[in-house]
View 1 (cartoon, rainbow, N blue to C red):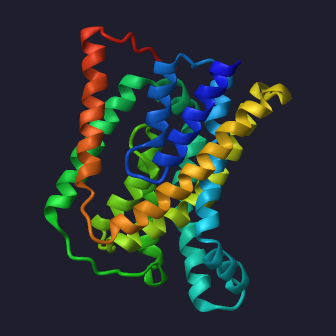
View 2 (tube, rainbow, N blue to C red):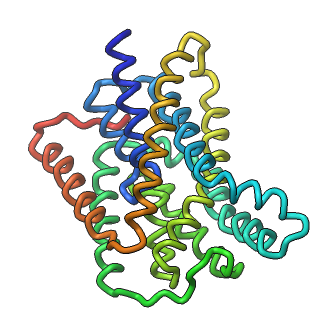
Length: 273
């Protein structure tokens, strides 16, 4: 059991560190879980549950703005616009996620497909960064509904494991004219309803895998994801204002190619999870 707790700690920390970076937390958890030898049914429920710890870290960091949003949604035009845009952007992933849930879980959750998505996503980031598009939108408070919907469809690309929800939303935002800070901030806020809904839905679909005896194990992962999420989000916010996303792209490409190489040569017996 001690060994399993160590694995839970590692996976929890990995979830918090990667959830809000454009590198795909799901992809990393799938690959790490395989390497650590924990791919049973309990591990699948664990990987869903610890997402709550990561998303709560964003809620904590942006708690002042969230309180302002909740208080002003009934009367403040700025907060009403943000709430509406978040609802609009949430819809594509929500609808497609429900419709394609079985296909995604059954066919796409494997190390090889994830590695391929990491590489493709990394190339896409480099191509968009190379265009060096001039931003036209510098604040999430000035988004219009049509732009929010486009960002929602960008986020929906992350239904394919390995694409990265934050990566798709942020890079899609850059393509659509958002500044780097605005794209990152909207991605963080959009993550809150998206991840709460996705986690609740996945936990409901996997409810037979949840057992009281596993609560301490799940708790370790939850706390680790929360604490490392705080560190990752704060560091990323500081980084994003003045730096390119190219390092994340090269990391994705290198990591993905390494997994594909070990699969191609048979060095690691990657199997679907």
